[in-house]
Amino acid sequence: MTKFWKCLLSLSLAAFLLSPAIAQDAKAKRAKPNARKEQPAVQLPKEITLTDEQKTKVAELEKEYAPKMKELREKLDKVMTEEQKKARLDVMKEAREKGKEGRKGKELQQAIKDAMKLSDEQQKSYDETDKKIVALRQEILEKVKPLLTDDQKEKLPKRPERKKAKDRKAA
Image (cartoon, rainbow, N blue to C red; front, side, top):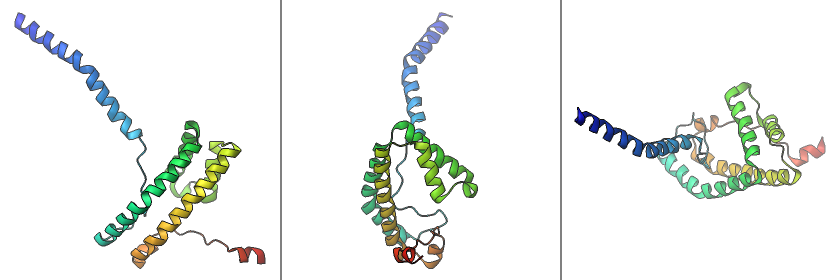
């Protein structure tokens, strides 16, 4: 009988000593899903399946543009407080969940700006950086398009045609 109690005492002592390590490991596992994963610089719709050759060329573009995109995203993050970042993510998440019925384009951008409540100085910095990100995405897209087949190009999201400055002046 004393052997049983010694074994039980040993096991409970081991559990007591290991519990902080197990709790810390569990806490680390929970923290990972909340961690923001880095978005790729080259973003294509899931419907586009690339060939091995295309994947290689896109990977080269990713290596070229990823550092530039990461720098701009970090600059954008520095403009906002944690509360503003959360408000921005909440609006974007809501739009994603609603899918086609959700806000899009300028309406979504306005909803994001309204939710973040940026100061004038923050707004100016945010807009400047956002314009640079949009320009870089366009530059990346122009390099990706020649790599795609006509069928793959059809699957790219359609952007409304922008009116040129001459057209606006004539109107």
